[in-house]
Image: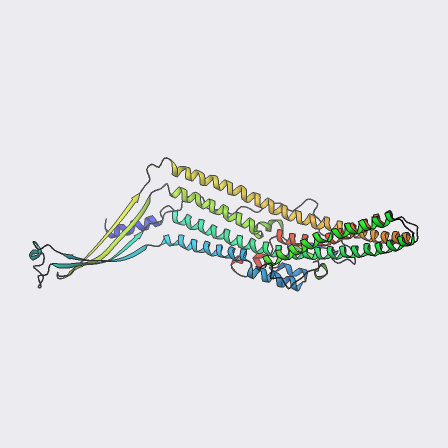
Length: 488
């Protein structure tokens, strides 16, 4: 075959198309709302921190640093520290770099491979034939050497799109790693903020429990004094001692949870538990945002990193079908060698070259290639269903967060009223007991009701902050507004 014919054949081969399906992004969901009967605002409690009315603003964009809506500088500093030092986030960044390099590895197949070599050898002829071999040598030496510099060029034309589909699959893997990094970023920031809110809740519960311990201690002192005067029985004193012991027993578990929460925060910030954080959180240091951005249902598939990751997984499965189909078709390889042979002891040197083309077609492998294609098609169906499941879960997460915000706001309103009533009842009952108009049992019942109402109110306040975090995470966490690799 002449060089011109080879050139023409190569041009025709390169014009081939890629076999397999061309990927098309799934259509966005047509749902017009996240939940049935979805409200646009929550209830509120006047003059109670954390009891503000919250409004859902549909279509408003979400800031990249969404946690700043809580207006807490120590929290902002802690999240920034965690994002710069957390090892899981750094591992996700490294995984993205690996995926990018794998794309470049696959792209290398678009170009010819060029290799150079130099071979050198030294020889001695037998004495019997030495005069004939070396007759052109002035020295008549029986020693001679070969020196062969050579360049080899090989190229596999992408006739049926095997390389193109492989690169497409590698790019999809890069997309998966990119959105996995985005998901890790959102999850880390949400975990840090959530842990800080839980710490604030525990501190408030501990403070309330200590107030109850102090209240019960004062009551016990009064009862012991009255017992000494003969106003009450020893049974009344024992009942108050039991009440104090029961309240005091609830404090160590809260202190344990607080310590564990501090350990969690230090670990999220990339530190050891012995390296305690400078930041401490209480509910009074956090401001509940009154306007919450809410992505439209049609936007959620663009803004949820787990949905985008599932989409890239679907894209990769589509590309693998093309790879499996191309593996069943003939493959071509073009090779060319060029070099020069020099023999010491002989005058001159000789050049050589060769050009070749090879076509390979698998004839029989027990049906393995066909089953590989069938498996790739089944994997695509699997990825499509996983994508749909991820979208449904995303809508469920948003609906759950919205419902939690609405119902927890209503619960806080009821619990605030209950706590106020329980406190007033306890004060009134205790005053009546001192005056001899109420029994000790009535005081204990009132005190128990107040303790439960006070702790429930603290937990309800913290729940509204936690629900806000859950909503920001459910709608994507604003990763698309960040600068850097994740936002590209």
